[in-house]
Length: 151
Length: 157
Image (cartoon, rainbow over all chains, first blue to last red; front, side):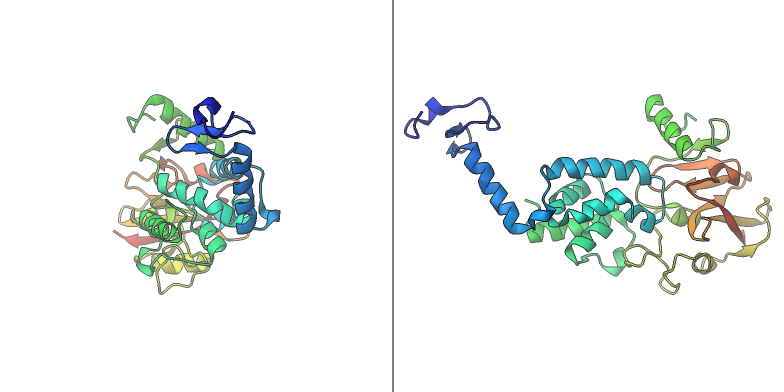
């Protein structure tokens, strides 16, 4: 297995645990998954405190989201919706949660605005858009694109 | 309960979820009358606004009439609806020449919900981000989630 002949090193999946180089149809040779994972991990550690790291942020976010939605869907009080423990834990994930929140907002507008404001300290929604959920979502998605959280 | 035409299975599931939250509701004392939507809530729906989610949140993120204090109190809600012509009244009984809104509150007196009376004497409620329902009595939504009716307001039709 050498870098000189990457096709020899083809693995069944990029997710397969291997220590050697792998070949990706789209981008050619990539470094070993181990090196790639370590690079991602070091970047995450650089961007957010280690204390906020979760072993699997996506899983953590989706678990908390499901719990929050199931227990607050019938409520009108934005305060009650937003102080739900699962929602507060999502806020506690910090900036790691932003791509997941924005992706959720893109798929289905919902009450993510308290969390977004709490995490970022910003509010791109204009006074005339207050309460208009689709417009509020659009304002945050525009913000997210501007900040590079949405590709 | 087959009002929506979105499939009996989905409809049945919504009914089950609603009756889980509100055990005083059952298949024979309420109807689902709209699809789920997060675009407005019960407070807006009572004011016949389907464009915005009304709430006097301290974050200043949701709609609340600008001239009314953003406090989660019955007084604030009374003042918000007063701008629509409503004033406090003594009874929730149907009166031909009046429209009525019932405001629910928790044991601490904090508003939780509003229901608007229909011309048949029943009540219409938007359940958070879920569906609108028509419920035959105000007691149908009494319980741990919305508390009880704290006051009723009315205006001339």
